[in-house]
Image (cartoon, rainbow, N blue to C red; front, side):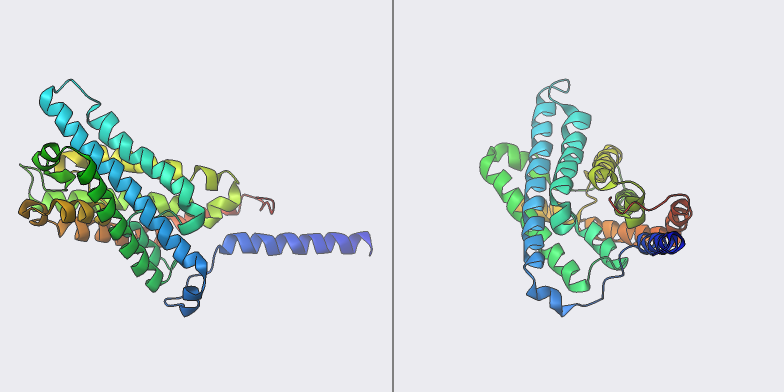
Length: 289
């Protein structure tokens, strides 16, 4: 083969690689019955169940622990910033990092719903993920109740999400929508295949902005709703606590996150993808990433 022919083949190969990186993963089918035949689906469901169980255990236990400490001495304990927001954000970082390659590390029905809307997962997988997450949340909260002082658990509302005194249902709904929008949009941007093509460190660092997003949203919404932004988290705490005040406004903690996730999916699809496409034009694909 002549040198000119080898150069021509090299250019052709680079063009094909560039096209592959720009295209990203093809949209998932709406329904794919074949995935039920593969162990990877069931392994992913187990992963989502266990991850959500652990997240709820840490989150609910932190909420109750903080309230017990702050009621005794407002200056004692770890407080809202270090105790609640850091606990939730840190756990999300760790759990997403450990479970991304297994299930995607959703740990949140709102994230799963957004992934389904953007055709990253099928509808059946979305439903099964949500079921596994909700079941894991219930079991995780049950472990908290079974291992914590009963008086502390009951007197602090079982860590359930409720609309705080002084805030309207409209304000609480808006907080859940905006908070979930921020989280789900950052999830989309963090896992974008075109961003992965630009830098091999993206898969490693992707859980970091997700954890910080949860941390920031917690700081903003804890005083309003206790920071739901995760229907499974709200459901698990409400089911185990099972008092009327935990159910009075429970719809807010489903409608808000799902609307926020849908808004993030629409915004991501029609806006930042164009910017990513433009950025990709400035980078050469690296097949070794």
